[in-house]
Length: 289
Ligand code: ADP
Ligand code: MG
Image (cartoon, rainbow, N blue to C red; front, side, top):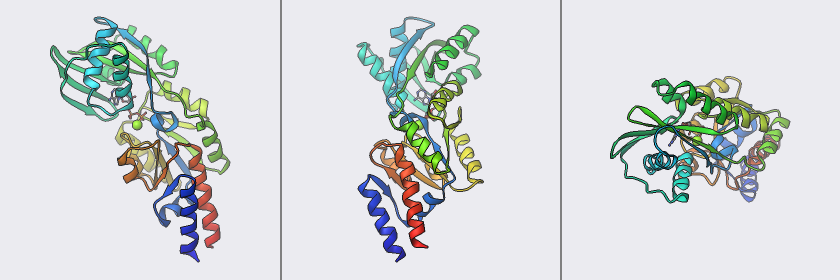
């Protein structure tokens, strides 16, 4: 009977580390036309590392120490990387007060000698803090697939920090399998367009970059006009996107938030798990009819 077919599909999924929260989610997965992927922590392993520190005022170590101070309360993967780099260099990280995180943009706090912010260079540019030399440095680093953050202090650009993350081993395969099922895969990211395009080209999927959290939601709504959309994310800043999709899929060990918001979860960090979810659902839908 129908409930038995669903129960057995959910159990089959669970045995493979694919968690599906009920029959409705299972059915939606089978009808999905588009899968949106977050980048950091989803298509990449989510452990970016600092590759370059460029000091434009003061020393490299000062730039890194100040950035680490501001990031010390943030759970963003970039924050973790900056803290790790400061620890590796055994820097004295000053104390920061009143840190405020602007999701998808930056984090700001007060240090002893003034306000410091760390975030997307686009916002430093909007505030008129980038000169031609800085823009050139950023373009070169981003062209190498790196994410660059600008460190500003008291309304001046203090430096740049570049970071790079590793692709998940099965990411390209996971995208190819979706394509074989006739499902469009698209990366939706807040990261810069140059780095995002480099990653998307390597994996063979479409991309929309430089999306602020609200724009990410609008992009998902737009994709939904073509049919059901699954959104895959690791949950750091992704909870709204996961719930805006027809079905949210958590991946990457996931945060508790992601697991609560998502209707499905891939417990073993495999991007190929998304295509498996679609196939499992389609097979079950056939059995029900
Ligand atoms: P993604 O789509 O890759 O998960 P996010 O939306 O989380 O990216 O962040 C987009 C961009 O906003 C980052 O690439 C970075 O430039 C900036 N940003 C967001 N949070 C932080 C932070 N805590 N520290 C520095 N930069 C940040
Ligand atoms: Mg994210």
